[in-house]
Length: 476
Image 1 (cartoon, helix red, strand yellow):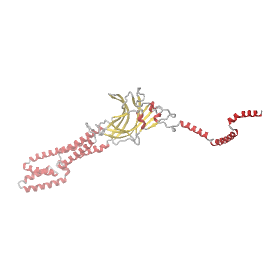
Image 2: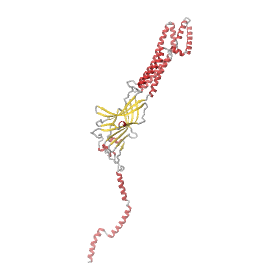
Image 3: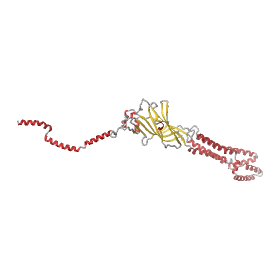
Image 4: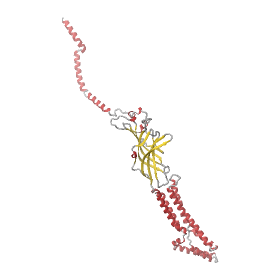
């Protein structure tokens, strides 16, 4: 009976022992585990707090782009679109606004008929394919490396000879994209373009030049160019200055250009008016020409018998005027019409040339007059008088009519006395003539000048002054 009771108790306790293991060891293990758990709990107590901080930082980093950088191509979805086609392809023309800031006008060449200008060219358009999501509605700015992957307007300069984009230290290109797809594309360019100049009033001229912008591939059905802010779209640097020109006005305008093969294109114009400074040309051309003309008038006050003095003065002034004309022509384009400076220089040259011709006429008429007087006194006196006249003319000595008459009378009286007496008389007359010249130089010049010289002293200055009044009144 007792055995049966023990077996029943054993059968009741056996499943619990099997499930819990040996009870004494489990208790020890449980006690040991309880102590280890408290020890471990003390050691890893900060771990849940660190996890919470990590989760908080992750939440913060979700709004930032510093953890995982997104490529611009992925953000703008460049690979999802074909940017070889313009925005809105197949629809209405895309409007492209333009504004320009002129940094400098580097040079203006009359010989090549062109000008060189440095400017900032900015394009504005909207391309919804480049729109992106942004929590703060801020734009993104890129350099020139992204330009080749998207569509940009193909604006070029009409009548340009050469141009380049500045590339120091990198290409001067800026692309700014806004979240709604609006795009700003800016370039810094130096361009040399033609300027159809009119030199008919040079150097008192005013030149109208223009820089023209146009799309090369897209006509008005695909692309519409316009000034972004009207006349205010064109801005200039306040310190723009040129050595020979004064910039009177800058203006912006627009129009259409027709090409027979491709149609109508929108064209924008940057117009500027240049007025030339005259002071440089006054010093280099006009004043020297005036002085040469006035110098040629000195010949009218020199004795008509002083051939070397008057001829050398006339030739010098003619050659100087030729040098001035050649120097001006060398710095100008070879145009087929007459310029204002040509009119002045060639008329001045004509005055100088006429002064030489005037003395040639005076010398010839004087010789003819003397020969007529000598013929009246006989052949014998004529021979001696001609020899004396020729000697005195080439020596530069002055001859008056009284001296010649005295000489002719004495020569007739001394013809019977022999050659020695005539030579002595000639020497005496020369001494007498020199003394009379020294005492009355002014009176002799006024009384013995030719009538042509007298009139030339008045006519040449008066006509030249009238010409200057007419010239400057017409061109200024």
